[in-house]
Length: 204
Image 1: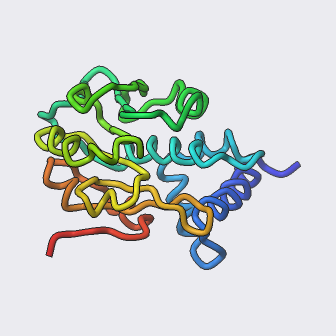
Image 2: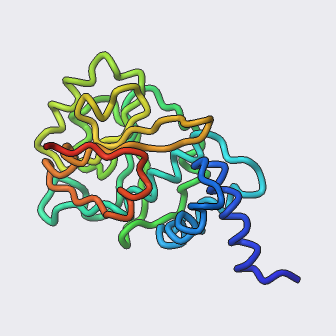
């Protein structure tokens, strides 16, 4: 019988290849990062069947939480790790099935759907749905004094001041980072996370 860790490693490798488009030359690097991130628990659950786009994005949100540091005196919750969704929810039941029972930084992950940006106080991560694109400027302005990591898959999100943008690359989920926006609010993004991003925007 194949050892469990060997079997899982092969599954992680296949999954990372399908998610990132990375092949043999860089899979070893990404596999090491996956183990470091804690993708072992999340992606293994979906490895037997191809994960959906929003299962992958939910898993990424979880791992963003592990590789971003929030200021000790911030506006986020101290009792739970809150991942919030603003606007039309594209995740449906995916959040609960993918992240239910998980922990980040010793806090239970709490999933919230909020009606407006003012309710984002206390959120660690805010996924801004594409339905909110016409109001993005106002939303980001409302969050300017908070330490909320903003994430979206709407076009031009990082160019417009958002922090992390999901992009599809050859039908695979990747992401871009606007490091300037994140650091301006006191967030610290791990170099490990930046290595996996397909692009990182920095102020000159």
